[in-house]
Image (cartoon, rainbow, N blue to C red; front, side):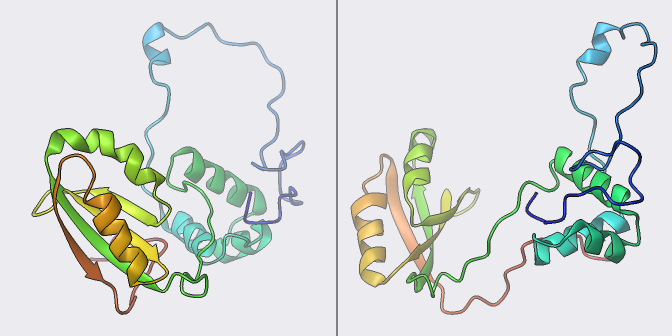
Length: 198
């Protein structure tokens, strides 16, 4: 995993796995097969993260390379528990992956814009693959409101932005109008948004 230290610690159970920190269960007689209706439940319902999970998520969101020993210390749990918590958060789809936060301006992409697209709904399914293929598009949302699609795009300059909008976006099937909002300052960028406290 991208958070670093993957060796089972001294507090991990005997035979601990290098990723999950859990030991292999000894052989024992197996119970009779469950009814078919229980097999339909392919995935248990995910529960909301608790305070310990929040600490782990916060540590990984700040630096995905944080080692398991440091995460366990921050969360005040054993290494084995930290391993199991991360595995459960991943299995439940709460942690979807680990990524790099890039400085796009230093990469030569100095212009950031939101592009609002309006048009006929039947064409949007066909346009999904096209929009996904544009390397300038960082995010693409289908929305309800005055527009149908919102794109977050990053380009080197206004010439590239003009070409993207006039040459490619406005020529997509069903597009009737576009509106462009150029970003002048990125104030807040949170990798993880947490529920507000009451």
